[in-house]
Length: 391
Image (cartoon, rainbow, N blue to C red):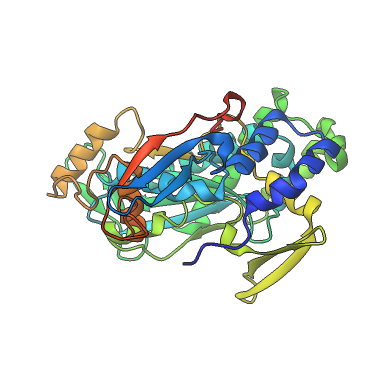
């Protein structure tokens, strides 16, 4: 794929300073914008690469490594996949999506840390409890969940992508129980349990004074108004969607790379930035057509910053037998019961240039000029301290 002619960083550099002057942004959003603006520029330092054959020389500037930067996610994804390589089992995997209703998303807009944590916790409780139900699978499952907060048009749309194995450990861990072919758990049951658990947890957070309300929702500070606001949600269906099985481990790896390290918009979707207007491509899922949308630069930046994660919030979390506290031991049991060795789907890589070659097939060690020489690297001065922030 050819490099994009327009990047998010270009929009931030040209319009970001004016936007920051006219908007009262929290510190982490200031740092996010400045990191993306400085990414792969002299501000972050870099290395000089010199060919030992033809003496070709060029400068490679450092990346910002911010988790919201479109240019920094390819290698971050490769590192994450490398860590996951030994956790995949030779079974089918399912992709299950849990989506918050629009009315709850409005509350999440002003309470991201609290509501995102509730979304993770109640989704995990839903999957773990129903999988363990003897009337269903009756197993201990293990899965991870990835938070996305955007739709294709950059509006606020919080939802979790969960990758769940087709089966799990029996209660005594003496055997692996397989799910039925191409079927994991009933989505109506998942939806009802998710709705009940989430609303219960949200009401508890409200009673503890953990929620804040502003703008059109300011009236929800009154308990009676809050109860009336939630009442219709207790009987309406909540969207839980289970996609078709992903296939075996290799297919899962390829699939995961498209979801785990996405940002709100990639550089490839940007089309133009002229006269203060940004045009980007989006997919309308109502008719499956790709369309173009044009908004002001102010509106584009506002929509992008809607999806800035609160500092310290983990957007990928692990549950069940993949929980950090006992992952290694549980996976060893799973592999023994499935009679499989540790996965060798990916080689162990330590240098980012090796990851890049794995992703693209292009070697960053060979001279791009003569194609024969090896690039020797000499360090330039490091980044400015105020810009070092990976959020």
